[in-house]
Image 1 (cartoon, rainbow, N blue to C red):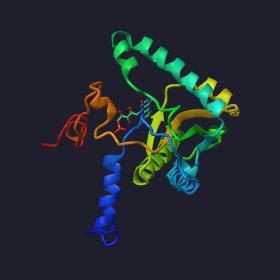
Image 2 (cartoon, protein in one colour):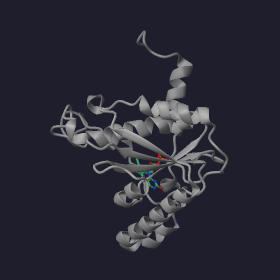
Image 3 (cartoon, rainbow, N blue to C red):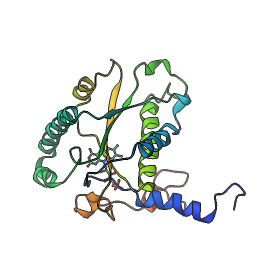
Image 4 (cartoon, protein in one colour):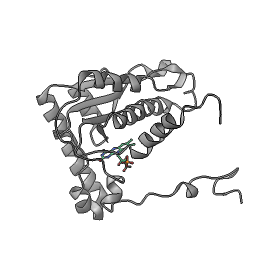
Length: 217
Ligand SMILES: Cc1cc2nc3c(=O)[nH]c(=O)nc-3n(C[C@H](O)[C@H](O)[C@H](O)COP(=O)(O)O)c2cc1C
């Protein structure tokens, strides 16, 4: 064991947050105390980012009318997604895929404008800006689980329409709507598994040695 390792209890807590984090779409109203919301946003802001670019921007949606307009955007995209799914359309429409109206807090997360000026780590892989934002969201997600709060990542929206609603500058891009707040209970498994929509694959099928597809045996 490395001398830098956390204590047994601390390690267990980290792994527990990772294992018990769930994408939540059922919320029980209530509120997120300001000091907890501040902690969660600090956790997000501690994320790694390509070239220390910190490309994330957060918009807290506190205006109920704006929240309603955002819900309409998501609902429109839900219907378009169902159409695009063809034969699984009805099954998809029965799934709950967002909790925008029920969550205590709604946050929009976006990529900043002017990202082309950042070349370090992005010359061949410009999408590392998006990867950095995802790291920030994952930090927030895990911290929320540790605080006992649910979080659901919603990506069902037209980014241009959401950018217009939020008054975002040209070149920026919204990538997530985060529904955050108290929940009655956390799903034991991913909801898409509980609902029979998808089957997760075990790590052993996704881990290779030296050559893609090889288990090294
Ligand atoms: C980038 C990203 C976008 C997602 N968008 C949605 C979404 O629009 N609606 C939804 O219900 N879930 C969304 N999810 C949640 C996934 O469905 C969920 O993470 C997956 O089913 C595994 O479940 P778990 O997060 O509870 O482990 C998204 C997750 C990620 C990482």
